[in-house]
Image 1 (tube, rainbow, N blue to C red):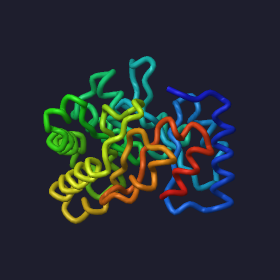
Image 2 (image 1 turned 180 degrees about the vertical axis):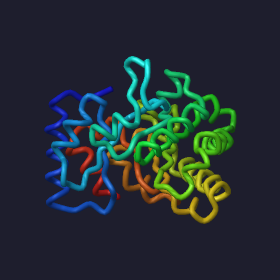
Image 3 (image 1 turned 45 degrees about the horizontal axis):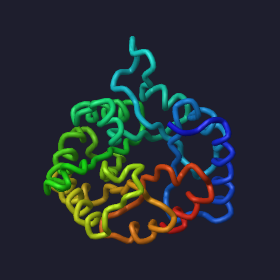
Image 4 (image 1 turned 90 degrees about the horizontal axis):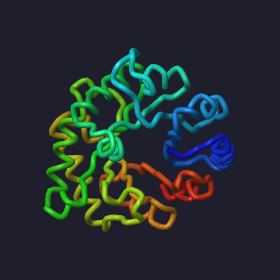
Length: 236
């Protein structure tokens, strides 16, 4: 829940920098719903993709305040983040809820980025791998097979805390997520991007992105300023 009209200037600065030096990675911005349309229009024709931060499973209806996948697509989005740890924690979303939203995203032609991750209590109990494997299984409907989607591992306890798992801890979970994807989707599961999210910053991005099965980053606070985000993109 960050970003007013001034954020459009940061987006334009990011776009200009990437035009001058093409990045090695895909780059997407997922602003609040109030900025999706303006950002999509302002960056039209460029390489930056625009996504939403969440959507509701239904197409429309008496759900005041919610955003459907179709609304995001109509505003210019091409992808959407689903099952973010804050949605799971503050809105009590279950794996089944997330799976329903994934179906909605596919229905609207959006690429889903599905988040998984353990709490501090689950990690301390030695349940990190078991938790994310269960979330991968429960949050991805069969319909995603053969479509473009990504999984993002974001340890709940690292979000906004400034804390980051060790590189070895990140690798263990990413390898486990990869295994769960391959077991579920066969060879195609080996090609699904697995992003890492959780206090990714300019000074740790290169080391994190070099880890086995880390195929990108889901960046939070460090994406709010173009200069910080550019440094992370260059590390890819």
